[in-house]
Length: 334
Image (cartoon, rainbow, N blue to C red; front, side, top):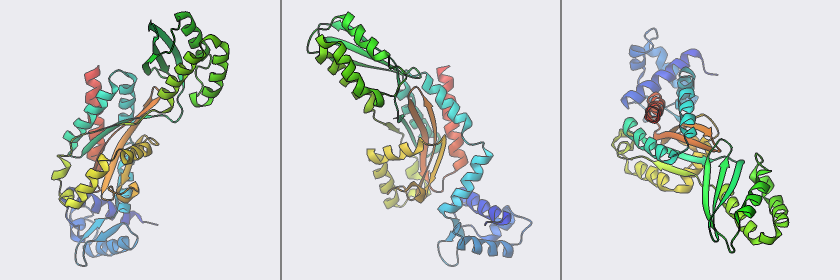
């Protein structure tokens, strides 16, 4: 069990190391942070904290630097003090409710975050586990050409053109839509099998057209793809922490790998504010990096906006940057 004094030492070491990038000695902590404690007392506490896994030494005579466990202690205190991600999440949800041009807004957010934070800005739209539709309609555009419109709960609209094998009158299309809309609000994954049976039986004259329309809806609702936007890497490549060629290559390879980024984004969608540090990420390429991201939910989708940076990230700056960028984007929409 960590004591209050040991907590103060850990927080002081992490804060100083984030600021300076240099190993932190007991005299520095005593002189700058814990002025009522002697250097000898702090040195003993540092030794105990190293045994407990919160601090480590680069070599025998050096000062200490934080471990992932030490960073976690610091980040949790920062989140508690900053009231977690309240402002960022509210702004992100408001942005999602505009719906139109959401992808472009998130792409812009990733670029802005790279610029203001010197880390790598990321943004993503990820589907919910269960999609529920609110309304379906079909519009006959010409012989064998139909426009499918799907409104998800929350107001997000999807559309797709369908080429039919036979011409289908608008009256038949309206019947097909009415049959679908009886199931409004229910999860698509639960109703699609029974829908195919009931609708094709009720509209026997256009069985193939019904099947084609249902397949189009299923393709739109059951195979949504996470869209990921990544800002510039130029800022992070200038940081002291990524002067090691191996580290920057590992991070770049990770960011370029779509499946790895998608898995990371999907993990983010579990909480409103996500901070994953070093080995907590559990994925190759991110052992020396950290992710800070806010998540919002609206209109049948989740959006993630955040930054990837070094483990020695200025976490307060990162959280403030996310909040600031979302505020600026919100003001542009107003």
